[in-house]
Image (tube, rainbow, N blue to C red; front, side, top):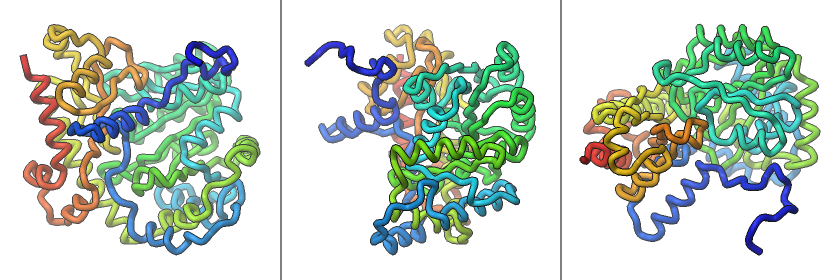
Length: 426
């Protein structure tokens, strides 16, 4: 039966599939039809799962029992020790870790369990706001400035909180950022933490890309606001295991009440995460020089590729920051508006649609991340390359110049050049 269905929950009426998932499926369908599509839509790590972790999964394929709702004890211990080593969170224990089927699901459970409005920077990852809508939460997007790398400012956060000081709030802070590729330094984190503490905010520090900070210098907000920060992580981005669906929340002991509530909801929904995946993930979070080498080479590839892509886009008139982490760019083509408007392109969505039709390059408009419809911003994930071969070529003495990128990341180079040629056309 076509048409509206009043039987649907009003909170999901008109809800469409996640933009990142939809563009990936659309790109695959176009490829299957015979088109040569450069996939810059879905932010999936191009690198293989590290061999020690993949081998651990093979060894544990026979595991079949339901595991504790909070997660395999050995995994929770490994996660706690991981954050001790990387983030300096000493004195914390596995009792403060909750394992879920992806950090995305854990963020959703948090919004279900905590009755507060959601506060996110603008732009922000596509699923935070729809999740809030599904559970009936109010969403407030705090604007950022492209001149400041689209970073949230303490003043903007404080002004919003002061307008209604007694309102409970969740702030989700994702960095290195999807969609911008930018990160936050210690001074900015300390200032944001001071505001969050003053207003007693619950903060989810979504640090899923912390392992792919290009300089290896990621700093956790938990260092500055330990009592109010839930550290969100997982193995999808730095460990190349997005399809394994395993995420983690690390709670401060002061939030045990919230952790317990989320665990209760988890017990009534997904019960527990796949047993073989949890056993294998123990290896991912343990100290291993092979994984450290994998990460070092991954960062070198992403840094070199992101720097080259951003420079090429700037060459044709885009405003595009050089990414500091993850594998995203968020170019703004507003300075080319006169040229694009003459071609009938007056919105980010129209830009992405025409770009895909004319060049086969699949991207997402800024509006999907909260930006205004008429803003000519685009998010692209520069991940359409063979990560396994690129890692092999990324030796310590490898000169990662343009020739190297053309040899080992040819589809990304081709996609950016298609974009630049299309943007430069009269």
